[in-house]
Image (cartoon, rainbow, N blue to C red; front, side, top):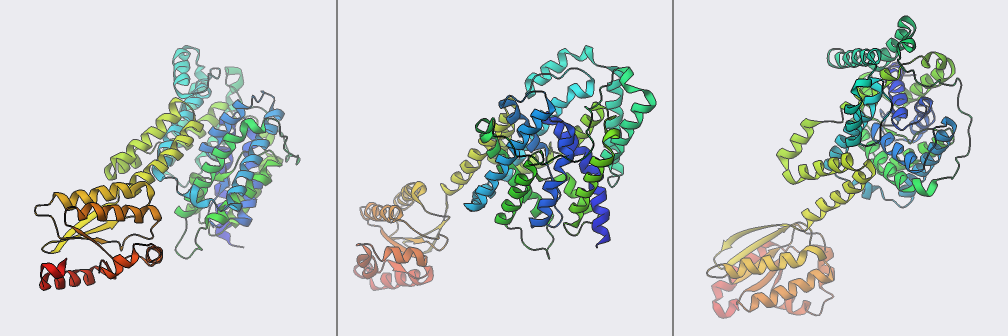
Length: 528
C-alpha cells in the first residue's frame, strides 16, 4: 500500500466532504446526498477511470444544473422525495454518458471549446454565490436566478441576523486566509469543525443562527430510482452529462503526468457513466471530476486511484459515526465553504488571456456566461454548445490563402485548411478575384493543396467552375501536391484526362514551377 496515497486520500476527504455537503444544499438536496456522492461514484471511478489522481464526487456546475432539473420536475420539500428525484436524475445522466460511450461520441463532446466552458463557469460561479447570500445573512431563501436573487437580497438586508452574519464573515475570512497563506491546510474541514464548536460554545440556535437539517446516521439503503418526472428532467440530464464529461476529461488531462497512460475519452465516458448509474441506486448527485478537490489530492501526494478509495472510506466513516455531530453545523458555515469553493470559477485572468489571444473568443465566453446568468444554466450550456460549433465553422469557413510568386506570370496560392461544401464557394470566388485583379494577370494560378486532406464532388465542381472563370481572363488553373485520397477521387471524374494530359496536375509545387519555367522557355505557344 502506497503511504502517500493513503495520506492524500485522507486530506482530500477533509476538503471534499464538507464541499460536497455544501454543494448538495446548492441543488436543494439534503446534505447527506453530498456525503453519499463521495462514496459509490468515487469508488466506481477509482476502479474504471483512467486518470490516476482524479477525485470524483460532484462539482458546482453539476449541482447548479441539478437544482434546475429538480425545480423543473416540481420536487417537493420532503427530503425523501428530493432524494428519490435526484436518483432519477443521476440515473438519466449515467445512461446518457453510457450512450455517448456506446455511440463513440466522445469526440463530439470533447470538441466543446475551453473558451465556452470558461464563460459558463463564470455564470455558474456568480449564480451560486448569489444563491448562497440568504444563508450567509440568515434571511429566508429568495427566488432562483442571479438578478432576482440580488434584488431579493438587497430588499431584505434589514432582516439579516447579526449572529449569522458574524459566523459567515469569520468563516469566509478564515477560509480566504488559509487559502492564501496556508493552502495545504484543509480549510473546509477547519471551517466545519469551527462552526460545530461555535454552535455548542455560543449556543448559536438561541441567537437565531439556522443549523443544517439533521443528518441521518448510516449508509443509504439501495433502491431502484423511480421514473416519475424522467421526461421533464431528461434535457437537464443530457446537459449534465455533457458538463460532467467535459469537467472530468479536463481535470484528468490537467493532472496527467508524462509517464501516465493517455486519457482516453471512451474510457472516461464509461467510467463516469458507470459511476453515475451506480450512484443513482444510493441517491447520489450526478458525479464528475472536481478540479479543486483533485488539486488537493495531487498536492497531498496522490499517485494512484487508491487515494480516492481512501477518500470514499473516510466518507463511509463520516456517514456511520459523525452524522449527529454534523447536524450541529450552521448553514452559514456551509454556505461560506461553498462560496469560497466556487469563487475560483470567477477566473478574470483566464478571460483576459482569452481576450489577448482572440477577441471573438472572449465575446463567445462572455456571451455564454451572460446567458447563464440572465436566463438559466441550461440555456447557458445549450448556447455554449452552439457557440462552440460556431467557432469551429467560423475557422473552417475562412481558410488562410497564402500566396507567393516564384516566377513572373506564376501565382502560387497555398490553401491552409480543409475544403468542404460550406467554404469552397467562398474560396473559389477569392481565387478568381486574386487572379483577375492583378495587373497584369498571371498566366497560371497554381493551387498548392498540400495542407488539405481530401476532396468531394462539390469541391471538384467548384474547381471546374473556377477553371472556366479564369480561362475567360486567359489564366490557366494548375494544382500541385494533391492528397492521395483526393487524387483517387479526382481520377474518377470525366475531366481528369484533360487535366492530366494538359499538364495541369503536378506532384509537388517545385515540379509545377519547373514545368511552368519550361513552358515559358518554349515560348507562348508552348506555354499555351
